[in-house]
Image 1: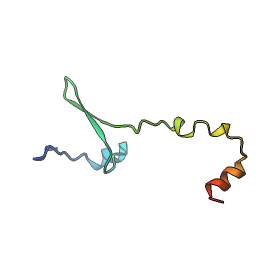
Image 2: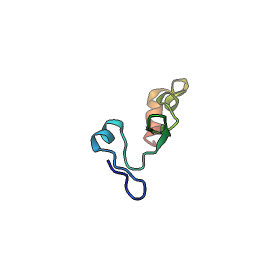
Image 3: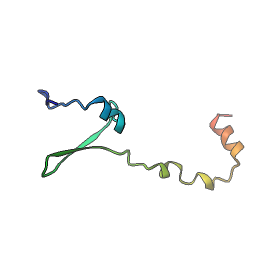
Image 4: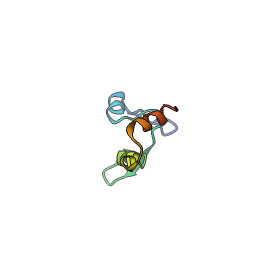
Length: 71
C-alpha cells in the first residue's frame, strides 16, 4: 500500500470484509515500537447490555410482540 497525499490508505477488501470494516467505521491508530496498530473502535455496548433486563419484564411474550408491532 502507499500512503496518499492526504495520509489516506486503502485497506484491502478481503481484510475489510473479514473484520467488518464498512464506510464510516471508526478506527484507532495506535503507535507501537514496531510500527502502528489499526484497531476497529467498538460501539461501547456489548450484546449483553443490549438485552439486559428483558427477562424481568412482567408482561407476557404475546403482549411484548403486540407492543413491538404497534398494536
